[in-house]
Image (cartoon, rainbow, N blue to C red; front, side, top):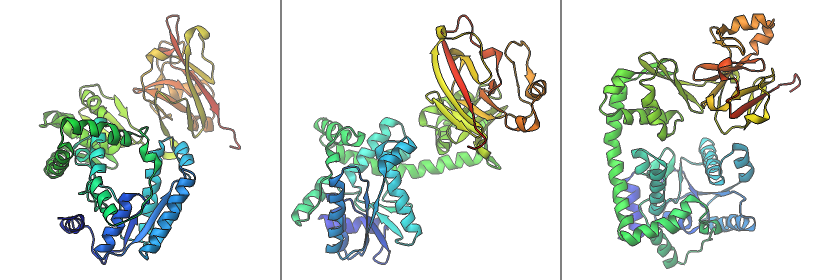
Length: 448
């Protein structure tokens, strides 16, 4: 069966699209997307071309855009082009260039669908891409969904070439005298995917010549297994999960007695911004005391008596901010915090109102910066007894508006600093302190 026949069969078997569906094809100008356009035309499908110019390779990026415009003329297809400020977007979001390009690309595709430009977006991802994706997922940590890789249809994204090897697409392009452009960045091994493609996969194939074919078969098996797995997980979650408003409540005893607690925890927490490696932390939380919690960028997992409660960090008026260990600056409603570590020898053993000097060895991350609430208490510096914050504020003669603007920095349900006012005595620096955590509060000015 030649590539064209395989292409038709794959589209039909996976019910990807019909000749009546408005189709948008993502075209970079490389051999994969050019082959996809040719295959679609030979099968009688009409489509619009979408090209992303990420402006990362200077004249080469402009060359690619011009090539795609000429390709669209060849196929009498409409072409849509979007230029992106990829580098500035990556810097602003503090993400890699690759992640930035992917986000920008799919945001634009979604906009085009919402504008009614197409019903579906077809990309030229092929079998080699999928195998690389599976390997990357495997090494980073994943569940079954990561092991089955990309799907032929995912939301509005279609991948009609997932059955084909790169070499098949290249051979098809050469046999049919197709022209394409080469992306020079594909030759650089500084990107993880390229390193796998150029270095790791060839080594594996030397040891196991049928490795790619076997991985392809594995992907199909994992895809089928995932259906059974999902049904079993959904069944178990339905039995034990209770939803109360925006919170997920899971009984600790039921979870511990389930056939596979770690699997249930993995499938539950990865929906809420927790990395796979944090499964063991949640399992440990099951036997911890009430009040212990874990944080992701968007959610908190709290041990509350016989329950595990997952709740969103709603950021109501930015009233909660998670502080991770590597962060050096935090912005919040009332100003900014500057954070750094320094040797204790440089410090006098005294904290000032605007600066907290804490024993770094006593601090465990992540921290939670939040507005104070009724019932909060801490051990003010120099005092052996705890004091309610409400009473502390009265003693400090704070006005009502000052109380409303008061924030605390919390660690494991313990307040370590009433921001800008007083640290907790339990976390002060002493003669035995080796490293000092210095946190400086820069109050927001009225005109800011």
